[in-house]
Image (cartoon, rainbow, N blue to C red):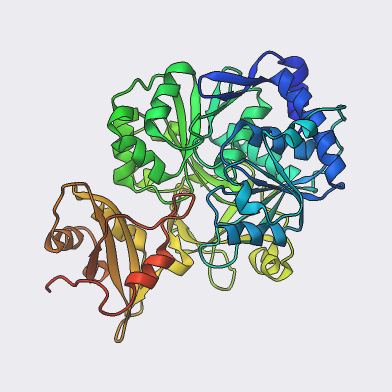
Length: 508
């Protein structure tokens, strides 16, 4: 089993179909991509031995996909890295993964120049590597690693989740079963980082000979996305919830023609209900939600487009606040602290198992044993199932606030605060308290030009949640700190605003 065989297959049966496009222009057909993959694989094998790791330090670029598939074609293992990492973060991953080669786009080459074997695209050396004789696809076993998926490292050093060819195949098949169908005239737009979610979701589209669309800006730009929807039909893309809200809040995108937009798959962080309702008011039910993590790539639960389309269904708002139903290819349960299954409605740690779950962490047997104990992936997420089987996440286990012996889940408080029309973003954290252990602090970003009092927000919370859950203090910020994937850095917020006396406290 080798995923690179998909491109070779389509090079024969769909040779003229667009495979990779940049902006409004077709970059490679499937026939051209198949030929490029076979010759680039030969060049890579001259630089690397079988099974060795090749790091990708690349912005979203058509050559990213060429390199990724050629790495597999050659029987090597890809180590994609986010283009926005710091020099020291690149060095850590490259050295930890023991990479034999780093492939970089010119804008990032200087940050990875420490590696003795660096191949920069669009250089004479790159063109020589792409030329020459073609090689056949290297046979690989289903359990052989294909992708080292390095976690974002928001709570410590990143860990390399070993994703096998089987893992990625199952994630691709699960997309068709639980997220959306893919047709030959479809396109997936890569506006989110291809090193993570968007790159994973390239695979079900490649398997169906669909078009991979890379914006000319190589980034997420709402106005550019609006223009691309005029050129291409049946366009889908993956976006973090913060990206979805950037689209909704952009006047150019909001006022454009959305008829060629097929599906936005959102995930990678919590989508608050009020934000989702605003997005659906603009774009209609063109949404599907996925819940997963690098260790089970994009594939634990899903909230389908069909469910988004049923606002008259009983409990629809509650369902939209969930992360959906377990995916076709995984078992999902909620465990207590002793790894015992909890009944419906009780809150505990979300665990899953199945062929999509990673083989383990690269060079980290202790973390592997702890995370995969008992044959279950322990996600570190806290949630519960309802009677219909929908999973609702409360928070990451490390984000739960324990005040006076009671658990307070920040997301519940955030959902209430976002109902205020003046609130753009909010993140709730715990702050040390000498008597209660912790107290609730809300970090709030307002819409431009808006003024909102602490008393207004306090009243909103008291009208919707128990008194002990409401924030004891508010911090008004210009923006929430986020990592390269759009996730709010609660660790940083706790460091900056989690100390006694660091936030303003409304009158009681």
